[in-house]
Length: 467
Image 1 (spheres, rainbow, N blue to C red):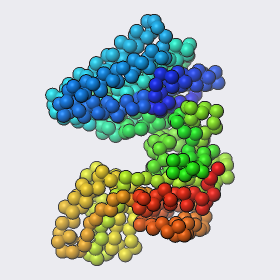
Image 2 (tube, helix red, strand yellow):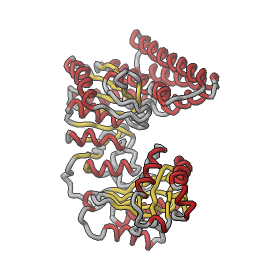
Image 3 (tube, one colour):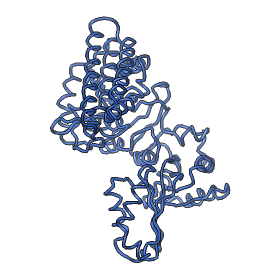
């Protein structure tokens, strides 16, 4: 059994949806048991969010205009993927019904003048509900029996709307009860990515870009043989090809390496998608919908290929370096605990931490959008220490970037850090902060954002990662 996920660009219009259906028809010749997970058509989720946001400002006409454009987009795709007849008429009725429901939701949001996380999930889940119907319709039109399924029937989550976590035991029970009988009837289930539901049936979402995660959850629940993530790239690259022209596809990579690269900005796979696959040791393939003949990248527990010391380099822009420093911090227990408790209470994710051994300075990285409220929260938490000058300053530095060097072969290999920082030093790139975990799977450091691309290229060349 295989689970195959297709991203938004893969189903971006009618022609692409038919291309996906052709890939699936060919795949069914080799694998009779196939489960498909689909994202919303590219651009649709953003449009849905915008419709809800303008509705919350009581801009009803603007909201309706967005909904009308979404209807036109999906009806055009429907005409391209399903021939004339009762099947197309039925699907058109379903599409109109779903977008009619969206208009009612937006009217309710407009009356309240507020967009809650629960309301947002109800709105932005509609993109996947529309796309599964189009893909299943295209497959049936090609003679490949398929059925569209809403993941609210399958993936049970907590009630942390917009960033829900799956309850795996209950999800596994639901998935097997619903999906296995369909496979026995020679049907291909086409499941909405990104969404789930609470025990009470309220729609939730798993976070932006999380259809990969949905596929991995289903693969885990079904004990499948392989999970294939289809996107618009040839696999996991040694670096972002928009930054490094010589970047090449990595043939094999470990779960841990993939998780590290995903966390530090490689957008090929959602960071949380690795864990359910790794838990059951299910091989994870990264493939290109638009270049299906390319072998792609295989993600496994232990790659067969000889491990290079460094597998890949990734980077994140749009971050802020927050620094807390003062002589009164030295040797005082609990300062770090209070600091990160204050940040956690703001719901801010800390992306990297560095602390001087003298304890005079703690710095950490947060998303740029959360920087000011993070600083304000720390100023409140350490108000007395600031007044006594035990803490001398709490500062935020914008326009910085994180660069991460990742590779299982780095573990126990002397000289990796030396090569990294020698390459940067020779080329006059200043390093602002450094962090390396004891696992030795990655070295992370901070540079000015304007120097990020140069730094990534220098390191890529230093380790000979080019094709």
